[in-house]
Image (cartoon, rainbow, N blue to C red; front, side, top):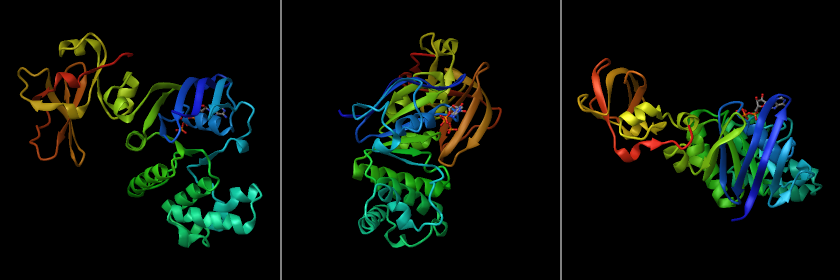
Length: 330
Ligand code: ATP
């Protein structure tokens, strides 16, 4: 495996704020790597450290094996797509896309040819003459993508690039971005606070919490086997069970998680988890049924079409022992 980006014990502190705190990670060449975490957890600072707009307070960053401590942003072969796209409003789309090539001194005819080529890749070949203000949000997003890709970066950094789009367009762009990344084979590093987006798009992801990586792995690993309570809670909406409860339902005395979709409705008598229904939330594909077990609220996902209990009714939840995930680190 060729490593595109490597962090070795990297920190970036701003006075007392530990924006990034002792992060080590490796991103494989050609990967779609997501950095997921709540607001302020250090994701954007990590991107800026890769692009070179920010310098580490400690640690070393390597891009394709080269220590980039003394390499300025314009020599890193890395480009960024920003959430607000940062397009030049007075330039037409073709000139926006060709901008990076102009800065590099590529002649006008050649850079416009390459811009047209890249606009075709993002399916905007007819739009070169328009101004950004005459495009939809999704089209502007694609222009921003083309503008970064025309420079042929080895690593493309994307900072919440779909954040400004409505849900429908966002989902369409997720598919497009993923397909484009696979076709071009460029390493993508994608920042998002949307767990669904990270899980559905990434080959591998890092979950950030307070400047540290809480877990790193494939979407399946992180979703099914969260390392900590924070990850279980943040990635999907798992039930997090304290040690005494884990023990009561047949596990060891340790924190554990149970995915709502692993729970089935069962008669209250004899069920491992039982109690009155405290909430029913309709989610389209099913309903989230929440019960109070006394100390802890536990939710099950009941697929559409199955009979539902009434609020206040005493029900039980059953599950397969294999679905009880005991967390290594609480
Ligand atoms: P968001 O999803 O809201 O963009 P994030 O995970 O990208 O959040 P960062 O932007 O990396 O988080 O910020 C991490 C922490 O570092 C925050 O507490 C932020 O206020 C702080 N921070 C970032 N840049 C600076 C700066 N230039 N000076 C001081 N503090 C900063």
